[in-house]
Image (tube, rainbow over all chains, first blue to last red; front, top):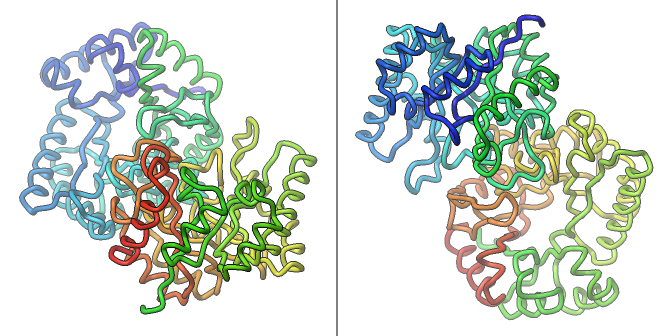
Length: 274
Length: 274
């Protein structure tokens, strides 16, 4: 693979930089693919962000994030759908490859995870026509089962692919190694995603041992136990040829370091252990 | 269900009591089924523990725990098998319903989870003849995927059942709601376990939102998001009629409370929300 490309999810440098500084930092390290978050775009303004993207010829491997569909009431669910439509507009304005969907967990005091999964399917279905009209692909990101209650009740790649089959064209999957590395069925699911031509993004980081926080203790590639090269080989064998996007939430380590140190480490690890 | 029975895994009262105090406490609350840990048995001595069990007519719904099969070297794996044989002897001496297996995670610097899963299958296979000879059932407990790296690389009920099919008679599953509640395939997997007649134990507690520690922040039944009655209905429909065993690791809450308060709460919640 001489054409491998690194993308930086701007959560990775969130501790050091906002959007404009992160773009400058990435360019210093010859990184021309990024994935920003909506709050980072809002802070600088959508028009200015789009100008920066265009002026620098950046590829956006995704916009983070849509989703969070479930709510206790029909009004709440409609409000969430409306927010996803705005996110689609932003992704279109930025020319992002996809809008990443973190679909949402159990609302309020619900214990009905099957019912909430139905809310997610309904929410994506209600959002999808606007996504298709806007030329924005929706990337369902299955999240690790430890987030089933509060972040995303889509927890395996197969479950996300079942949703894709149900929903039709315009929706695919974002495969983040952090969320799926443990799955005994991972290789078969990646092959299935390839046959369905639904792989929209490939996120990388690492699983640390021990992991000290459920959300904010992701590791730099190579510092944990994930077989990054093995999973990449499966994803490439399934036909995906897009960038690998580094997404690291690390409150007590990488978010405390200078952005240039974080990016230099990402580049070095990308070239050696990914 | 008029014949529902509560069992207390003695991890639940670990903060307050050793084995003998925990037995006395359970008897005060009319609880006659328990599941102790090997360190608790060792602290009082196996013979004395067995005497207490017999003298009080206690049912042991399991002995915690065997497992931890993977190791970097063949010698290490043999040492682990030998330890499991000793655990089987202890389970036999105590008359436990089963020896619970927490199978182990990635040893050393391994990133080969598929290979390590093979070590687990080999380890159980090497242990199983002694278990059969001793009349002790081995209960594979699939653990939540967040423990895949460091505690157990068997992470779904279906994966555990695949192992059971591979290994033959004498091995079944312990279904702990904490580990499996998120699984989109849970209902089908429970039904499959019933058809295979492999359900050896049913553990309960709850998943808290937020969860502040990966290991030691389990919730009391009713304080979290797990549909305990729904999962029980599936397990009963699959033919299981044994006790429900409360197993709560709670360093900062229940382990700090008096044992009698913990047990009284277990009884009340068992009668209302389980």
